[in-house]
Image 1 (cartoon, rainbow, N blue to C red):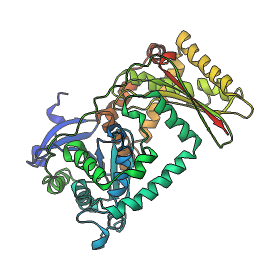
Image 2 (cartoon, helix red, strand yellow):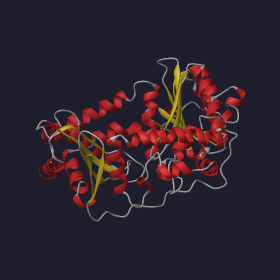
Image 3 (cartoon, one colour):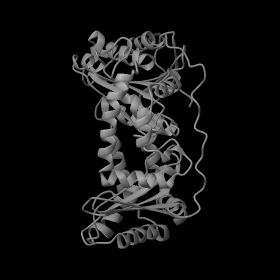
Image 4 (cartoon, rainbow, N blue to C red):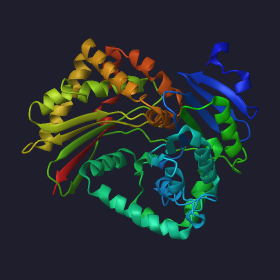
Length: 438
């Protein structure tokens, strides 16, 4: 991306420890010279608050058998204590941040983990100090591991009792036989039960470094002061002895439909159909986003009219999450009482085949674009909302996916939507899941 002189911040505003990289959509990207930490800044002075988010490019995608759930486990443990912020000295991370009015949490998913604070602007130095300290100073001791193991196993069991979540994971695990998207983010139960401090420490020492992280600061702050604070707290952190290992396993082509049935206690059945989809940065993903809205967004959508209005389902949805590696485009339908899985599945395919054969209308595509753009606009409502969306773009592989999203969607045509349905929504690349109440 070639930048004009007007797009670049004043040179005096950039500390010597940083290189300015690029700007897009008002967000400025910098590189900390000492360790390749990526820093994103978005000044918004509407209110005297700031969101700090550290996104690590590590998730269940990076886990191996025996260490599944490691990223999520570390999410818990990295709140338990670090070198300077721990219960022994009376300065736990949660208490220290909440004392100054911060909202603080973390989330883990397939391609990333993020830690974030929304707090008054004057306390940004404290948040940066804490995040830098736990980047390399997490304590990870045996007592905390055992305590959190119980918490995570309870969380695992709650998920096992949620039909939608259980079906969702069963379909993903059946759709992927080689690629680590096969693993649930929370991990397999036996791995949670048996993981050790040594195993988690090795995982932490492999992935939790500046070169594998992005620091995002959004809200009311001074650019030069914020960068100077980042350099002060993160600049002394070095680089790992070896870079984080890349994920080299590719999912082999699927050569036929796969089917799975989940039986457990419940009230209503459900059907989920999933198709292999492109990675989130590919342009094909733009048309699949539009297709998902045409299929299942609102009462005017194809699946709602064909299934829910007809009394076959009580709820329908379609989604195509933008992931780092090729993911899944899926449809989900919750059966109405007395309706069978087979008739709902068949009706769903009829809707898809109609689009493949006859396409979609300009009106449908424009409505879908409007809905997607409205969602994106709502995602700019405040520093934390921006951080949440920016986090997923970083995980997909390029933070500019967030700033260019509207333009990408605007270029999608009716022909694109039909072609993507014909290309990706095919039987041989399909995995079908039934949830059957026992």
